[in-house]
Length: 128
Image 1 (spheres, rainbow, N blue to C red):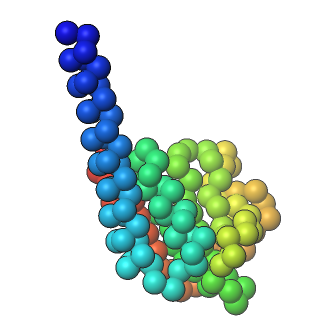
Image 2: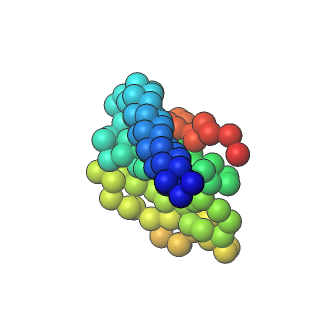
């Protein structure tokens, strides 16, 4: 009986790991197709978010033009957290909004007024 339990546990773990690897591979394939032209570092973030537990609200990544450069806005996973803004080299530029006040970290007060060319790059497609 003990042997049977160990065998079932081992098979379950093996199948679960295989299924997880398969899911990640599918996400990588679909992400690569839908994010052509998006920096590799942003694509890696998408793959990372896809392999983690789904957040509420779900992760979304937008691109904008801000002060003449393309930037990437990533919403916070939950309430009262800062939303992140990255440049195309994945350097964190700041937190234009979010946080307890909703006004970010105060370093990018003009972002929401001056950003242009909004484009949804990626949204977590998994259902809650």
